[in-house]
Figure 1 (cartoon, one colour):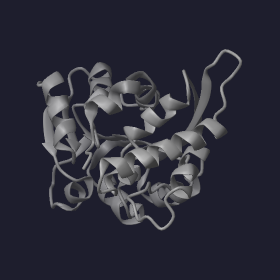
Figure 2 (cartoon, rainbow, N blue to C red):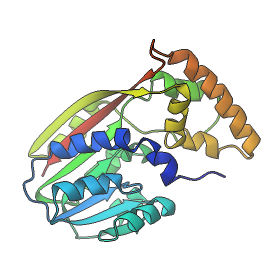
Figure 3 (spheres, rainbow, N blue to C red):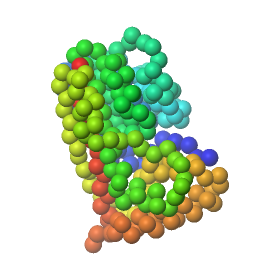
Figure 4 (tube, one colour):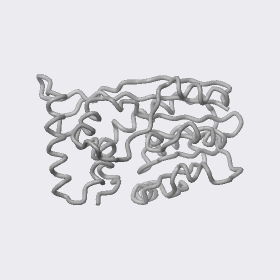
Length: 251
């Protein structure tokens, strides 16, 4: 059975890291002494945090051992934890962080209404809870996944509207900034879109199959649909739109 793969994920490292850079740039904290990167993956987001706050003690947390192994190999100076975000949030602890950060990870975690106040409780006074999640669940690429797998129960994204997160977070916040950005990635062909999602959104679908042949058949049908909804431009490239929701909530 396939598992989360750092090499596959990092095939589009620049594109996946840009939203993280945009989020970090909007965090108005001149000093961060302790930070935690929830769902840090292979550490590309953690590296951005370290570039901004070079003196910070940074912890990276992810439930994928292979992702943490890659992160630890590349950045041994940080503290790395293999753990589920929900388990971390629910574990009794008095430890707080100047920055609780998550880039493109919390969409995989259910029950945001219950989880997010627990995450915010780990923010020190004067600190921030900074998050980016994809909000393109109804984009053609995702609709195609569901259309060719009717009845298949998979771990899909958990993402709500901006007003849901506003109502949830504003009672705990001294200030709350929210915004959405639609990134238009220029990719060489439809196959690149499939490769993109093989490192993220397609994983639960691929993991649900028992054999490589079933996975190959699924991917062939998915590529066929992607070619139809993302046609090449006159220069041969395809335009891959990806919308993301951001917020920085200050405690």
